[in-house]
Image (cartoon, rainbow, N blue to C red; front, side, top):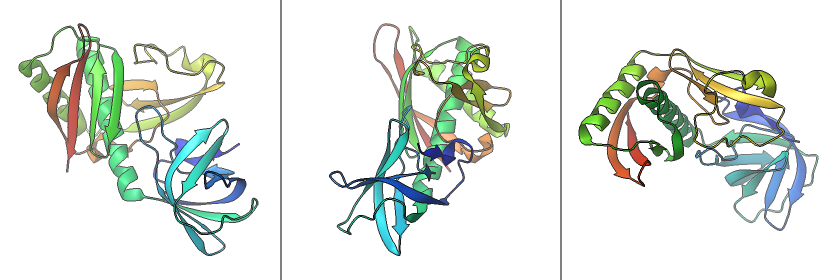
Length: 240
């Protein structure tokens, strides 16, 4: 089992660990703990590097398989054996952009749910850009402009962002914990991670976020589209 360090500290740029398993066929290495985000919930997986016995292995992506996070390696260096000590390094510039983007999408989600009661039907992101789908029947320029203004107003309020890991039974007592139209939480997981933008939004989420909305930057709605009768998509970009 890989301990997921990013769940409690999204700002961890480097970490120490031990090799717990090697997948030679796919050039992948599992660790006993990792700060690499393995992808999920629309947030792409982290890249970076792992150093073992002085050898630097570039990591192109991480992926969670069962209870372990495997780190897929570039290059041709011989793979180490299990048990060795590792120094992990996140591609921080890319990760921090994704943290800002993910928080921006939660602010968008919080504003739309608060002001219009619309559920999320999908979402995706890349560094400093993303899109989110909502259960809207109609969408027009004036509505989108109003949403953009409200999102940037919330960013300017410098709201704190809190992460908690709660027993499933306790978490599901929180009203509107699941903001997606379909509950995507796997059945049977005993603990649920929540992300709260204090005073605006509280929902189940497994990704990485900034500590304060003021870190996000300015959000600009760059496009919007109809993806069905009651499904509308908003595209955003993050500016410094």
